[in-house]
Picture 1 (spheres, rainbow, N blue to C red):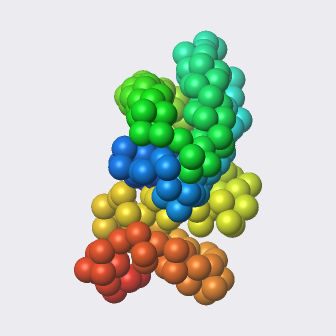
Picture 2 (picture 1 turned 45 degrees about the horizontal axis):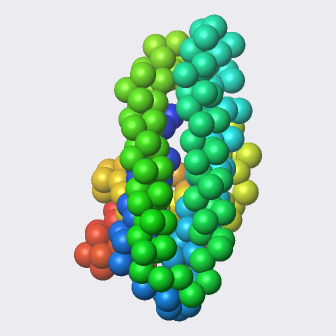
Length: 215
């Protein structure tokens, strides 16, 4: 059995939404309430997914890793605390935007987010190069798969939908076939339909048709 990577899919999704937010924050007219509300809507989803992901990592990946390899979680837990504080400041600044800000204020917000974005990308790269390897080296394929299933069972379906909205467009065709085939096999038909409905606007028509023809 091929060992499952615990971070790959979720991190692709997070890189996707972080990049989307960075692009939108850079071109938003901060004196337009319509444009600011669009930014805030995307930002609220981003902050929610980042927060949910952090708690999943702490509880369901780093905790069992620490039990097996003492001290292995220390670096990531410290990083999570540091980044959570910066993220909270970004969320606070975002909440204060109301369409009355000038260009300079908007640019300063964009730079603040860019600072967080760059640090977060460095953090998740460290996780995939170091922490992922620790998981692969210290847990069997069966244990990793079982833990992945346990995580999925804990997550409420609306959160899964929101996550897949950003994960699916950021993955390869083969990776997506694997995920959606599992949905088709194990979940009610309406669950698969909900997934397809939420990912369709996020993908090119060509990619969407190709994916749905393979499941």
